[in-house]
Length: 90
Image (cartoon, rainbow, N blue to C red; front, side, top):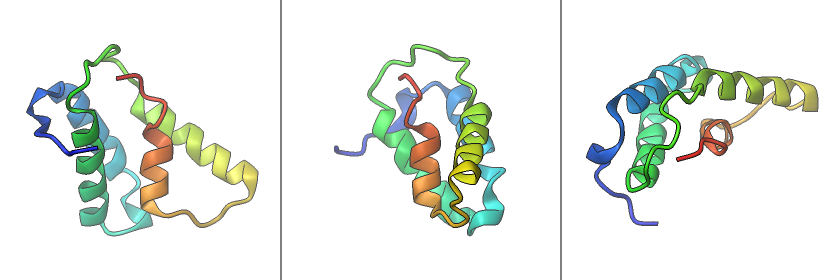
């Protein structure tokens, strides 16, 4: 999928995603997280936001619990971001 300008994405949603991802910065370098979330935002920039009240924090917390329950102690930021955001309905 070609990355597009993210200017069409709801600014509040973009901000919410970045804030949530910033909360997991202890896993890796913040620059890497921001790069990955920008990529994710670009992937969705051409889609219409259906639910502007997406609970990104809840998705991330659910994924953390899933990882703990499955016994996975190490996970890459890329997997974390992708898994935590894959159920967002854009």
